[in-house]
Length: 76
Image (cartoon, rainbow, N blue to C red; front, side):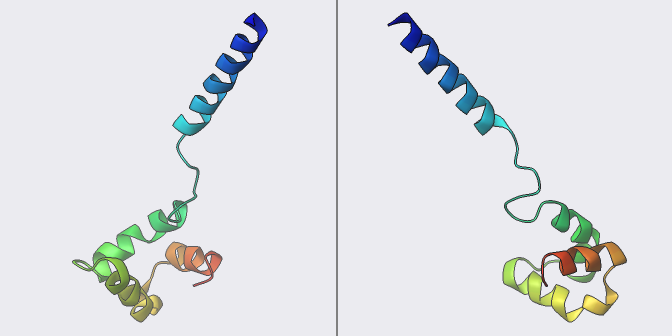
């Protein structure tokens, strides 16, 4: 019974540690969003969600090289 308790405790500890770690570049694009943050604020201030994405697309020729590269990597 003692071995089972230790095994369960170790499993819970490992799961808790994994859940506490921040995602690395996943989810919403992480680094890609950071590469375009300044461009979005400069070119599309006041717009959010789909309106901001449309604005970025409309201004794609004005984007920084880093943002262009990030968008290309994301398939946009």
